[in-house]
Length: 72
Image (tube, rainbow, N blue to C red; front, side):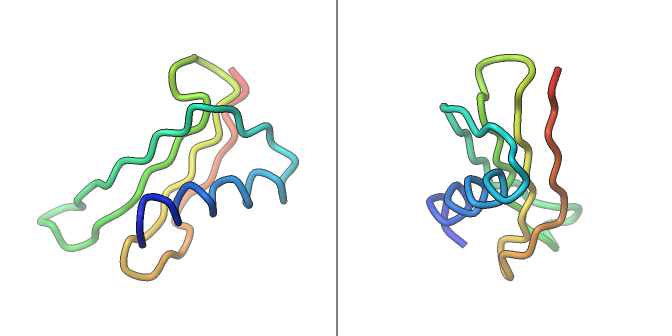
């Protein structure tokens, strides 16, 4: 999974759930415990507190591991 794919999937998930997905979107690749599982963590409205969409993807498969809307 690439950074761009993670961001596009985040925007799609936000639309499906009727969550506002505001710019800027920050995507960070994180290594799991003992580097076994690499993940992408994408956060919308990243420079502000509140109104954030946060999605975690498995890097190898692209599956959604966590998804949340943080209103405040």
